[in-house]
Length: 131
Image (cartoon, rainbow, N blue to C red; front, side, top):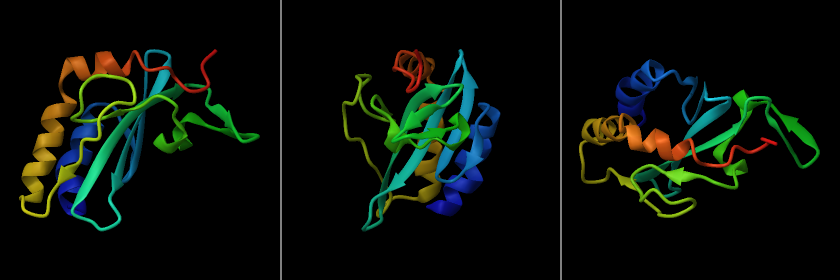
């Protein structure tokens, strides 16, 4: 699955303006920074893609300043899992690949990432560290 993500999803993320490397990506947008993180299940065969936002200036976390480019989705108070309904912190959508072609799973992610309503919704999430 890692190979399919690196060959199919990462180049697509680059065209969408994301920087970073697996599992964490970021891009500036609308005065904040979008985060996108892949989190694989411990036993393998499934993962989630979490989306959220942080202030462009970064944020403080347990007394330490975290720059936006180093932020991880685990810091977020509001997030969205790709494939779930558009509600804050709602849904537990997993991309399972045990019985699927990893390339098809990667293409499914790309199809979801180009939905305008996805980014409209992500834009409504509270950016961590924003005033």
